[in-house]
Length: 251
Image (cartoon, rainbow, N blue to C red):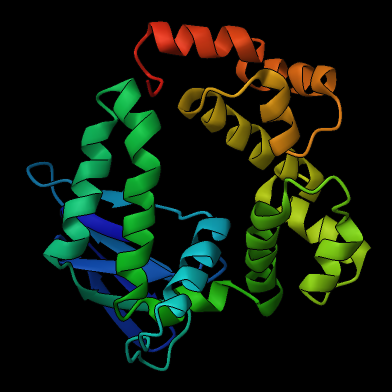
């Protein structure tokens, strides 16, 4: 998506011409070939915000939006390009995204949230058709696989074949496409979910390391400790003590 800040650009796609200026937002399919002519001057150069949303974010947002039961907005016939007025509901998270880059902590904590809101706002607009065209049925099923892994991650007998069967894909195709879309294998994501659950339990309960490891689906406490230290930099007990000292753990 692109929003002009100053100046403007005329985008030509076939027999259609679209004005990209500060009052509009353009959403365009990344593989679309188009022509563009910039209209600017030294006093008013062409300056624009261009944002490429990750495909996995669009897929996850699309699935969560479908779960609301709300009908998507009516869109034009084009599934490669849309242009509409820049509404405050979209301009606000775009501005917050830019502002959070001033602070590394804000960037780490808030930028992903702003990107989620931007994706959601676009899905509630005329850009819905463009964003939906980026996501195939297989990718939607892969988001379902994420949810299944999150629900079943504690099970020691969870396998790639079971997850693939749940989303009606062959194990090899599922594993390949999951890794391509999300940047990690299904079992790596499962480990991430287990360890994050364990981290939260360490900070919010009085459980022992062994109890937390068991709840996260680890048969071996030593194996859990090694994985936890690799992920978070400290062994579980030292991590919990450090967080309590810093005031981040529940009493």
